[in-house]
Length: 486
Image (cartoon, rainbow, N blue to C red; front, side, top):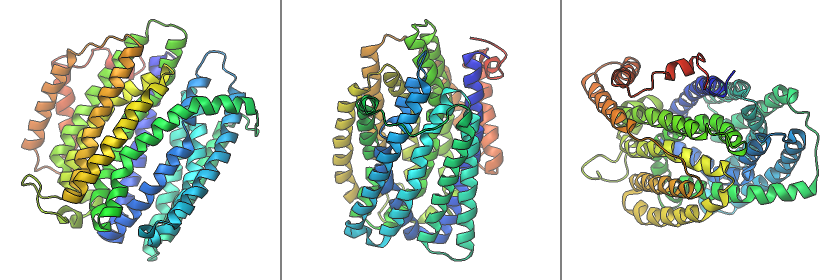
């Protein structure tokens, strides 16, 4: 099977898996928002936002280091994986213990300190699972990773729904994530045993290499999570849990949708690395195809969510979140969760392209060059949030997220261009934009339809338009159906 076919297969499998896990996540959001209310869901959101800072630090860039190193020709896979997993386990345990202790000493988090402890423990298992995901990614067997993730999410959903049924507290509900993530990890280890037999490894010289290689990626990741999640933390410290609760559902939608480019790039990344190190002249072609796919995918996501944002919020969070607000209208528009989502979705669209540029920089091994731009983004993001959040709360946070993502896209593109000469054909963007306009018109005209009819219908209109005006390469469907080699 050609690389293109393998990527198509793995991307398709992951999309199916993500559709399933997303459906489970939406069910959980719907249940939790209705059970906890706006304020209670704000506390739930704060716990996860705070913990995620430390989860990124615990990951320490191991995933991308592992994936890059075992994708190289003649890599010593066993040595790399065993040392990475051993190092990762010790580091993660230390960092998550520190996270719990820090949470104990923040006065505003007094009521949620034990919840933070539970989710840090749950995040430990999720962090370790990333090693096996890297192995599956390298072997282009993401069907196994998708299977374990779906089963883990099913366990979480079952526990959460049962806890809600018996009227449990928030802390009891949070234990569901601990058990679900633990099961996910052990299932991954079981399925991954045919690729690697894990044995604790303490090659300290190699650990030094791992540390030095991962440090730049870790710094970039930590800086990224700061400007990605700091708005929720600032909201929790400067505003009320109700503000955080209003911002929670639209931000959860952003987190789900932003996984899409990550899924695709995770499958393309090993191919980029392989082409780079083997000096294969197909690299530019692969890069162009990735760009085409991401732009074609981003447009319907952005336009679709802008048009149906209120209906999305109503489904996933309930009518209470449709009208809830703590500030007056902004620019004449009610400051609700729906408006925040319409702003945030622009950041999602930008992230589709920034993922491509950023991943190419990491594939080149130039991740250190990402540090200063990301550090600048942290100061930009935090500073602007401190200005806008006191004035327009969660709407200000959403605006800052979009502006930051736009700057990141430009920075990643500039760094990539300085390190590799890849040509991009941008003529197709005009056709994609035209199809997007037709999509918007169809959503407006058929808005009265049931959402489950409206979404596939408008999607068909978009892709049919692209097909008719030749905005989609004629060989794309053959590639996706594994009928054509590249």
